[in-house]
Amino acid sequence: MSEITKELIITTHQKDVQIAFLEDKRLVELHREKSSDQFSVGDIYLGKVRRLHAGLRAAFVDIGAEKDAFLHYSDLGSKVKTINEFVAQAIAKKRRSITNFPSEPTITKTGEINEVLSTGQLLLVQIAKEAISTKGPRVTTEISFAGRYVVLVPFGDKISISQKIKNNEERNRLKKIVQGIKPRNFGIIIRTVAKDKNVEEIEADLKQLVRKWNSAIANLPQAKPPSKIVDELDKTSVLIRDFVNETFHAIHIDSPTLYQEVKNYINSFSENRQKSDIVKLYKGSSPIFEYFNVAKQIKSSFGKVVTLKNGIYLIIEHTEAMHVIDVNSGNRMRKSDKEESTLEINIEAAAEIARQLRLRDMGGLIVIDFIDLEKAASRKTLHKKMTEFMANDRAKHTILPPSKFGLVEITRQRVRQATTIEIEEQCPSCQGTGKIKPLILIEEELENMLEFLFLKQIEKSVTIAVHPYIYAFLTKGLISKRVKWMLKFKRYIRIESKQGYQLLEYRFFNSNLEEIVLWNRKREK
Image (cartoon, rainbow, N blue to C red; front, side, top):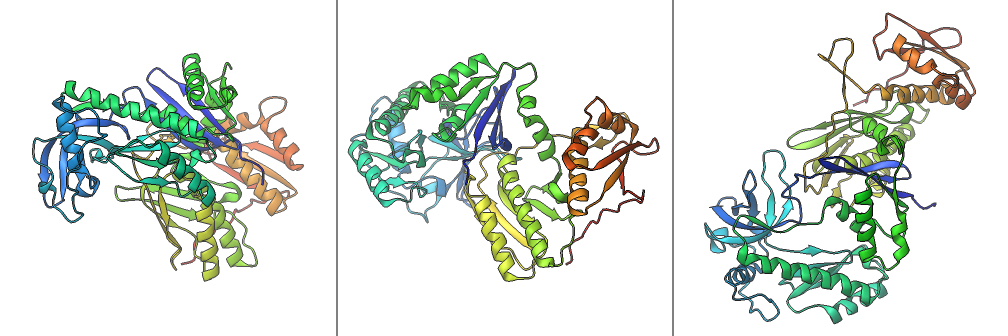
């Protein structure tokens, strides 16, 4: 199996940075960081308990956000009393180091929130989930600092290793390294990228995190709650920290300033100084997202309807409670073996759904309505494939096997609002009172139809009837889109202009000028 080409495409504007993550030139993740972004995951605040809610076993904490942050009893951590006492002494300038700090009694899992916290109490909290919809941020008192190779957990005592490191010898080696360098009263989580790294690299990463913790404690006496104590790295740095490794291909940036910052950042943790050579400054005249075909992929991927090849399409709906995805076979030709055909369609759809979950960062409950499969073996195969497709998803997730009704339920970690992009365009016919799908997608849609007609339905030639605007677009230039299609499929293609057609209306006719009715199979429930 050939190695996947991984790239980051980064574009900057006055108010934000947009980051596209590509695998084999295909968009799989899209991130946007605004200069005004506050209350991001990983940020640490000194907050004040606004009120306690015994029924919810939770506290509402003022961290300066529009809505108070939510702190559940389960997010306190067993060492919360120790942390709170240390923070109180640090604010009073009585303590700065946790090395010999005495431990307070641990709390039980079945305790009550008012046994641990009180109204008006100052708390050091970290954002675990950003504000979503009508809910404020969710916070935790289990503070952690993520580095490239390890995660530092103050007042912890355990050494944990990523489950993705399977080799027992390597796991034992890493554990011995960390045992030799771990500061007292700190827990350590060893990340996947620490695999095969030497003690110097891991120790340097650990020391940087300890300095970050010490800096946070030093800021406490001057802090006036609610106030931010520690900034998480900006999204660009976080993605580079988590993504970039020996297998990464390139990072393209259109800003000279950000280009230099990223090069310096990679050099700060990379043992190979040449690694920063993967960072490339884009100097082209066209926008970087257009040059790398990101803009078109955004248009085709963020609509309510997502079309795949061979006519398969997904309908994606977002509600307050869940995300719902419906799989449709479109104009896919029926095979003699209906079960095999249906399974094939479902597997193709599952691959795109796994991509869509990452691309839109859809979290919470996701329900997928696949086309019904009658055989248990087919449903098992679909579940296995869905699991494989989501193996590279960094968000924690659980996938249940398909039900008899073809429904697959997925829970996916939600830490921020799902990404939504308005792609519909104003209709030129009604001057903006209606919406149409992006015109840029009509080319791709027609090409997919031609591929189906020539390769699956074995048509000898095809005539496409379209609106005059679309006709002009498809026939302009010496090597027009029509000519390119004929070269690609080695078939004759005729295009007709029809003034009576709506803007995006089209019809196909065979060599006998008989209209081709594209079969649209509905689910048989």
